[in-house]
Each structure stands twice: as structure tokens, then as C-alpha cells.
Length: 227
Image (cartoon, rainbow, N blue to C red; front, side, top):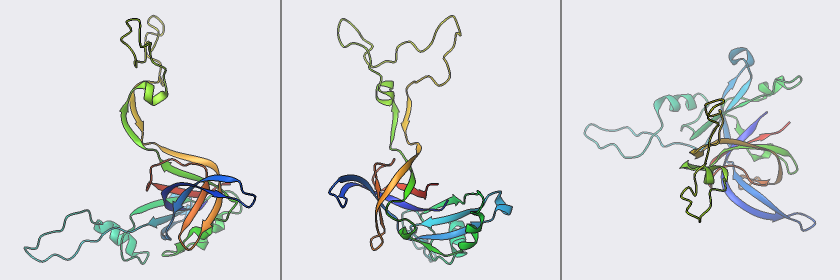
């Protein structure tokens, strides 16, 4: 199923025809370029690779000239983008697998290198799924990570935010796999399904999606058609 790469602008609210308030997430998806088309016979499944945004390029430096600061696109990525007719390498590249169910295989023939995909792929009322990366919060304890209640704050207790006992001693004499423990919180890839497209602004490349999606403001998200 094809989709588009975008950037999460933030959340707002809109009103429908009967005056109902609808919370929406605004995704800015500038035109994506098809950078690669993979057939099923080559990779085992049919997919379309899209590029979003643009990276800065290296300039031709003269002997003794100082190299400017900042990241520049590697030559391999520049060469890969050149095959699709792009002058600059995309900032983000993602592959969208084409569904292999009966009747959908011919979709792969409708995409060509250099083709532009815009928000016109989606229509209001359409159901989509959005993939994003949740905010990373570093190493956290069980109270913040899982919402544990913690211990009492009075009567001489000194274990306010500790997890307590984490497993039986005699049998099985080990900590069970999957036990909720302190650790890295957030920074996970998450896909929210069953979201509804409320509005599409073609002129400004905006998609208004009902509800919330994972990720911070300006985070990269993938909007895919569902079903």
C-alpha cells in the first residue's frame, strides 16, 4: 500500500459541517519523489522507494580553501538520487511495500523514477495509518516509565519510587522475562491505525488527520493508506 513521507507540524482543531469540534494532527508532506522501484522478482516483494526533503551538497573546494561546517550529502546518496533525476539527495528515504494481494500487483507498473507524489493521494474521509517515532526520554524508573504507584511517603518508608520485589526466590529462582523494570523510555517506532483524514490542503501540502500520532513536533511520519 502506497503512502507519503511527511513532517508532523503539530495538533489543532477544526469544525465539520454540523459544528462538531475535531482534534486533528497536521502533517506537512511536500511532494515525494520516486527514487527506486523494486519488482517482486528482484527483492521478493514489490516496493516503491520515496524521497522527502533535500540535503545540502558539497561544493567544489580549491586547494587550501577551508571546508564549510555542517553535514553534507554523501556521494553515494547523491549518485542514487541522480538516477531519479534529482539534483540533490533527499533528506529522508523510505520504502513502501506494495500489497501482494490478488489484483494489486499491477500497481507497481504505475510508478516511474522521478515521479512526484503529493497529498492528492488522500481524500477526506479516507482511513489511514501513521507511523512515527515517539519522543525519547532517556533512562527512566518504573514510576515514570510504567506508571507504578510507588511506596508510601510516610511511616519511615525509604523506597518511594522503587519497583519492589521483582520475582520469587525459591521457584523459579530468577526474574521472569518481560518484567517491567527501569530502562530506556520512548524513542520507539509506533504505528497508529484507524485514523481518518479530515481535510487535505493541496496548496500548502497539508494533511489533517483525526487524533494524535507518535512523535514530536517536526518529527518524520509515514502516512499510509489502510486496507
